[in-house]
Amino acid sequence: MSGVAVIIVAGGKGIRATSQGLSRDEAIPKQYQLIAGFSLISRSILAFADHRKIDVIQCVIGQDHRELYDLHALESGKLLEPVVGGSERQASVLAGLDALEKLRPELVLIHDAARPLVSPEVIEDVLKHLKSATAVLPVVSVVPTIKHSEDGARVDGTPDRSKLYEAQTPQGFRYPDILEAHRKAAKEADMVFTDDASIAEWAGMEVALSKGERHNIKVTTPEDFALAELYLGQKQAMETRTGTGLDIHRFVTGDKVRLAEVDIPHTHRLEGHSDADAALHVLTDALLGALGEGDIGRHFPPSEPRWKGEPSATFLQFAAERVRERGGRIVHLDLTLMCEAPKIGPHADRMRENIARICGIAVSRVSVKATTSEKMGFVGRGEGLFAHGTASIEVPRGDD
Image (cartoon, helix red, strand yellow):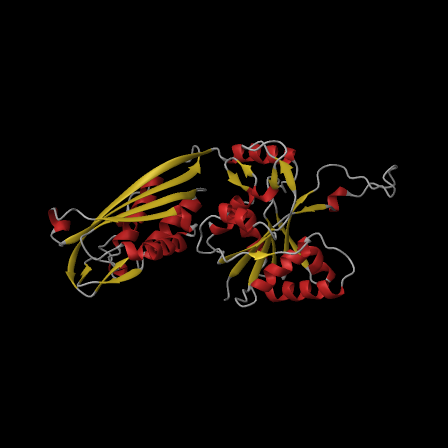
């Protein structure tokens, strides 16, 4: 593949006492602890599953964590089978890199599951810098005054903080280069590396800096969990909007029906100006409606010849991009198809995957259902198909 892979490192054994329904003497690994209803690893997976430029996600988990992982791994067509990591972070990352070798992605981002608040902007800036760099490290400037002490008892130096930066993840690399560097370090290095940029430096790679964010903290202590929840409360100054879409298409003579880019064999096809994909049409209208930006006909008028036969994915991609341009995100898409034939159920999962791919969101954010009209009306007579779509989005409060 020539795309972008993500490794999420979640093999740590760090634990903290939990007050989330368990007694104080019970503890579970921190990456499976909850903040605002979702675990750290769930939020980390979702951050990349929802990013349109990410192709696959490889999680690296602890030896005895498979049951926990299965409980918390959100459904996504981008998510690969997890692999078990080593006793140290460095070994876990190498396990993830090795697991990707058959795919041979062009780029790889390596992210700690304990950084659940990573934003699309941080991810995007790493990818932007990777267009011209071999290795990229997101950073924030150091604000407090830093002191150096050799013995831990007396200050013997004050570094110039204007030249100091705090490293974050995801750290981005050209896949072949970081794979080679990690393998070499595992064989030859006599030190333990705490991040992947350090291995890149050790291997002689130039590491470029990209923009991190203060909110992109590594959650380690109980205080960090409280801080992460506070940041989430600030980030969630969003409002939820809902839009709906309705569409009806007539059946005409043909050999297949196209719905959500799945061609279903049938005695008829749907008639329309574009490719007549009613499933994608209603979701496009639902997203545009939630934004208050009209409907598909306003942006892609059927009176214009250039849209004749156009793949409906073009329209849905446009609507999803408009949500992102407004600083928002797609929370959920719900699709209901009504027809007597063909049968939709056997194809629903493929439809969900296609819709998620087109919109750049996790499959878990898409629902596809089908029903009949109990032989009543034009649907019952087999004259056409009725589609209904609902979109829930979040946009910044006050975005008018």
